[in-house]
Length: 232
Image (tube, rainbow, N blue to C red; front, side, top):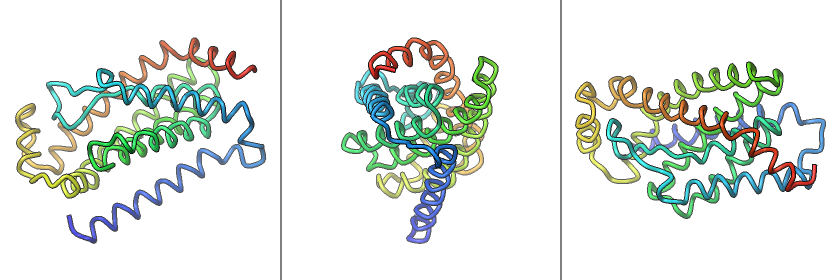
């Protein structure tokens, strides 16, 4: 990865960050956003999310994906917060959770940047749709659309931006990364399109499916508990 690639990554990430903030906050522009209750909810959900990341046994790799791709559950509180209180709250949970995670990074913050982008996409898209259709059907449709958008977007970003950035920051040779992928899936012949189709897409689809199931299992109990704590 050369200076041009790094600049391109920074510019692309910055543009996406600005777009995500605008979309998340659009429906709140005429309202007072940071009330005491909202701040308390954001803080509680962000703390839960950070704990889910920090506890070692709650993040793990799977034998049918490369070891550098981990399943973790810290996006679930953000999705629940987005469903319960709107896309802006869900986005803020993702943002604060990411800031809390940075000191614990084992990837020189590359993984945290990727998680922030991917988590923001799924939280904002799903909660915007659910906000307009607050029923089971709206929740399912919202999450499925968000999942589709996130899987495709994260697949492209991981394959054609983040993977090179990860290799550059960590100092790993491309051959070593490719070898790790081929050990679990011989169909991966390069770190381009075969990585995209046989690693990035299926991994993110699997992870999102797990988040979908757990979100629906935990949604009502979690946000009702937070409502009691915040004295609604």
